Length: 136
Image 1 (cartoon, rainbow, N blue to C red):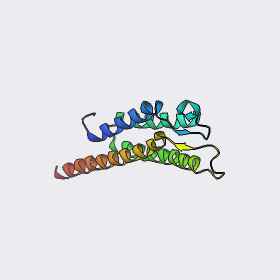
Image 2: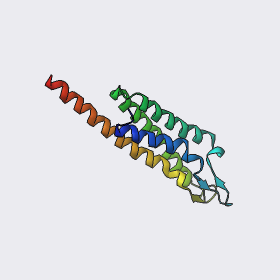
Image 3: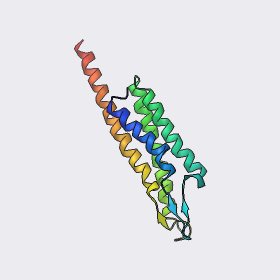
Image 4: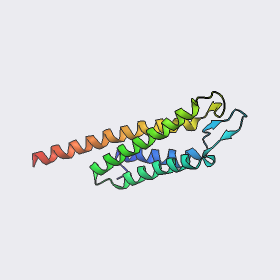
């Protein structure tokens, strides 16, 4: 289970979205106050649901097709979170809320890249199993 490369990618997603996001600054306001995860409830719920989906995907290592679909769902959730961060950083009224972007805004990008790499490895495993079944 954990020796497969896609499981390592997914474990890295769990660590980044559940643990590292606690210390990463999301953004700074125009008054210089740093906003972390505990200030935004639904953003925290999004990060934790991304980590939970990745953990569930690790546990579905015997069902590669379900793992693949779950990773795609996780990519969509990351895209929504990334879209919120882009909207928040480029708000229409100018410099009212978000003054400086933090490293926490890039976490969905890292997660998307790792999920794509995991899906490529899952597809490679599935093709290998199909080719072995063909030889029987």
